[in-house]
Length: 314
View 1 (cartoon, rainbow, N blue to C red):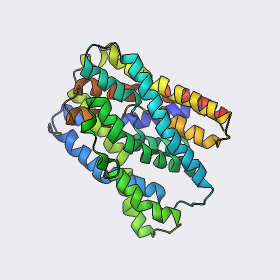
View 2: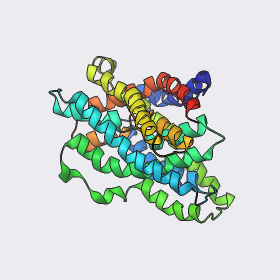
View 3: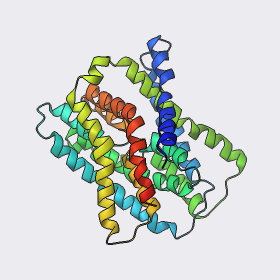
């Protein structure tokens, strides 16, 4: 994987946050802009991105074994990074900040950024996008369970219905029968679906820019915990995940593209869901926001460096 092309692709993605930043700074975006745009992102654009990623893609039964590997690894790798993050931050005295750091250490931006990044880095391999969509099924389920618990520390906050009743998962459930049965979707139907799905990445970056504009710069750079959470998410998470997968592959053969997909997914920056949960359940919003923003900014460098290893996996 070429460093410069990967660097430019990731840079282009992060630069999409600039309009949101400046529009908020000059007060053209109101205080509620991020929340309103987040609703549009979660309930409209991301679900349509999921459907667009499955519709009119060829399916054969041989894919099922790779899908099973993706789902299995999605669960195992997230638990692994979660427990490593717990060990790293266990001495922290600020309980709310510790929980925010743990959440941002393992919850990755898989849906909003993962699929577009995979499309940009591997435009000739649609299977990697499919693996990312399948990963999202397990990721969304764990986000509404382990993710909620990571922020709150309370099992009673976990709503089992949210595992299925969340917009991206519902969209996948709708699209899967068409995918498995190779039912073609007419172009006139696909066009609006694709348009709405394509909004996902720009919207998520604009929201990031708005939140960056609302944050005091000193808060972003003066907290050691934020740097540590960012290091765990961008470096420890992908390398630990790759190490576990390579160990398993010594025992059971695994498709190299499955390894690449999961490795790239693990390298994504922190997900905004950690911040959303902090806001919903009165967690440490500032630490969650700072960690999310910091990891998204620094992934411009870390993703291209980490992607250099992909050539040895396939």
